Structures are given as structure tokens and as C-alpha cells.
Length: 175
Ligand SMILES: CC(C)(COP(=O)(O)OP(=O)(O)OC[C@H]1O[C@@H](n2cnc3c(N)ncnc32)[C@H](O)[C@@H]1OP(=O)(O)O)[C@@H](O)C(=O)NCCC(=O)NCCS
Image (cartoon, rainbow, N blue to C red; front, side, top):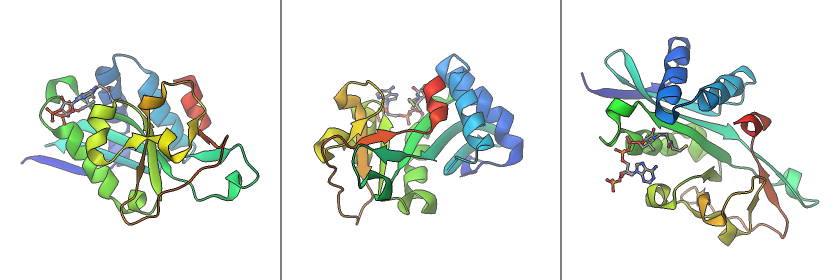
């Protein structure tokens, strides 16, 4: 039958929690997805299934900007995360596939840029680079090389002003 990637459906909610529990070895990320869903902050939620088994999941949520008089009126992007693959399915290209599918989706190509906190070596292949080169800071204290931004192809790269800071949805504060 092969792997199928599509937007989450109600039957996927518990399997998504399970994917993240197993992938991250804790409950935080699954709870985060649940809270984003409850607060209608899932800009995109894709699931990969193997037959009727959900094996990979990725979420995107909206972000906000602060730090300047214009920040609230700037076009904003989307935050990638979490992304997880069931441990027994890892290392087979499913992670790359679901990230690629998400970035190609209408929901995400309609945003001017995407951010995440993660491994530059993993996400660099999708065009993510240090957000600092665009002048953007992250609300979280993370090493700058891990706070990454990707510009949607065909969109003019953003230029942020000194002090402009990216904020995730508040649900991320409890991860
Ligand atoms: C990260 C994750 C989603 C990748 O999915 P996957 O199906 O295992 O990865 P793939 O088989 O598609 O391969 C991804 C590529 O990235 C690399 N990669 C995988 N995990 C990586 C990591 N944490 N850091 C850097 N590179 C990584 C792989 O080596 C592979 O590289 P290659 O193509 O040069 O061999 C998956 O391993 C996972 O769920 N990990 C636990 C949760 C997690 O850390 N999520 C990401 C942070 S939000």
C-alpha cells in the first residue's frame, strides 16, 4: 500500500500524541500539538500513514513579532514543530518526506517565511538558514545557529529591524 501523507483527521489525534511520545520519549510535544489544536492554532498538521497506522506527524503554527512600532503589522510566517517519526520507522526518509510535503502545501507556501529551532544540518537542505542573517531574534534563549528561517521560494527575503523578535504561540512556553 505504501506511505500516504495527508492532513490530520479526528481519528489521528491519539496516534499523533503517541508518535511524539515515542519519538521524543516524553509527553510534552504531544501535549503541545493537542493544545495548538484546541486553540485552533494548527496552521498545518500532516500525518503519514503506513496502511492504517500513523507513523509520522508534522505541525506548523502561526507566530507573532514584537520589538518595533511596525512589528505587529509585518507579514508573519509560520513555525515548524514538532515533527516526529515513530522510532521503528526512523531512518527511512519519512522525516524528510513529511517536511518536504509540508513545505509544498498551500497552507505553508502562502506564508512568506518559516522558522524553527533545530539542527542546521537536517533543515539546511530545505533552505533553512540562520534567522540572524535576516536580523530576526527568537524569544527563546537558543544558540543563534539553531534558530533557522527559510524564505518561501519566489518571495522577497525579509529584512528585520534591530530588536525585532519572533514569538511562538504561548503553548510552546510549556514545552
Ligand atoms: C528528526 C526525525 C523527524 C527525522 O526523521 P527520520 O525519518 O528519522 O529521518 P530521515 O530518514 O528522513 O532522514 C533524515 C536525514 O536527516 C538526518 N537526521 C535525522 N535526524 C537528525 C537529527 N536529529 N539531527 C540531524 N540530522 C538528522 C538523517 O541522518 C538523514 O540524513 P541523510 O539523508 O544524510 O542520511 C526523526 O528522527 C524523529 O522523530 N526524531 C525524534 C524527534 C525529533 O528530534 N524531532 C525533530 C526536532 S522537532
